[in-house]
Image 1 (cartoon, rainbow, N blue to C red):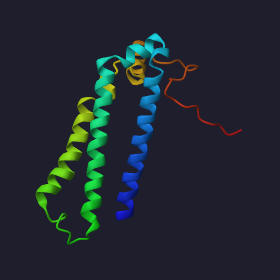
Image 2: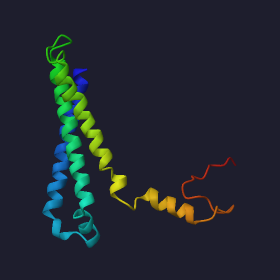
Image 3: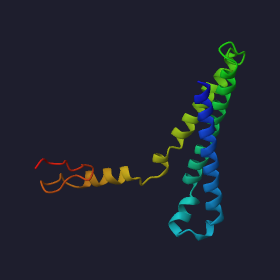
Image 4: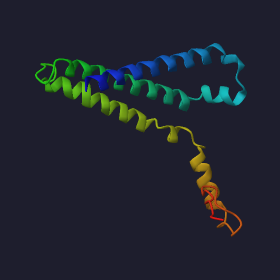
Length: 144
């Protein structure tokens, strides 16, 4: 269990370092983006999405660190037997991560996602004819 928890924290730390690297690279070349990228980056929706991802990341990262401390002393560890800290540092942190990403879900923040565009096209078009396959279908291989 400890190995899994430590691996989880290491993986999250690597993700955080890579995300920071991307952030600083984008910040460095912020004047060189085209107009559509600039509009997206400065939109409130995108900023709230980034904030929600950051809050969720911190909540899950702290929870994983707490779980390492909890499991480090074995099953009789006083940290493990403290119910209040367990509820706050495990349950509440998970609840925060889930709540934030549900409120600021990318599907709600970006109005024109592929799924909504495709759904609108399907509603507007008639049923496909024999020679037209729907966009979401994959042709089946036939035996010769």
